[in-house]
Length: 235
Ligand code: UDP
Image (tube, rainbow, N blue to C red; front, top):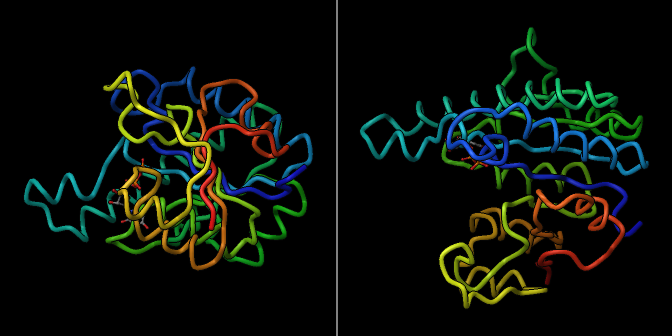
């Protein structure tokens, strides 16, 4: 295995399937069945879940809501998603722990780095919820932060397309896919991999990012094995 411990970033949108909003049961079951298989093979998996399928701080603040309050709502949305993912993963036969960056003891464990590492070592999937716990950040940045703290070998950024393109492949038929990119190229060309704060953190700490299609069966495992899947971003 090329990657023995990975941080998988799932956007909220991925959980909505063909819908624009909410959680689509069949989609979440499929995604979690695949993640469970990967964990059963011995790869240590930490997840960071987005919340865009329920609430996005920036969108609400553009309509007049206070940005910090809107962002806290966004962080709570990621907790809702995390509990849904936990349920689906456990039904697929793996042990999990949800750890939140905002304490809510009745719902989940607080995020404690050393405890999260211990869970991973015991083969439990750690689901990191509530982002970084701070407004004005995104779950992409949370993914970069947790990946570094938990000493993951890479961030696996799951998307609906099979890698990074020079323009939107869903809109332009002549869009060109990259097999690999440097962090600087991503920043300079403003490619939509992760937001710039997250990319800068990965660049400063030499953490590779693999962008790949979540909806092609077997992809997560292939990425961990070191097969060329999607686009790899590194120094
Ligand atoms: N958020 C935040 N701080 C964080 C992570 C997330 O304030 O550290 C809020 C922010 O409002 C964001 C929302 O939570 O819009 C949902 O996260 P995100 O948009 O990153 O989810 P995704 O696009 O991955 O579904």
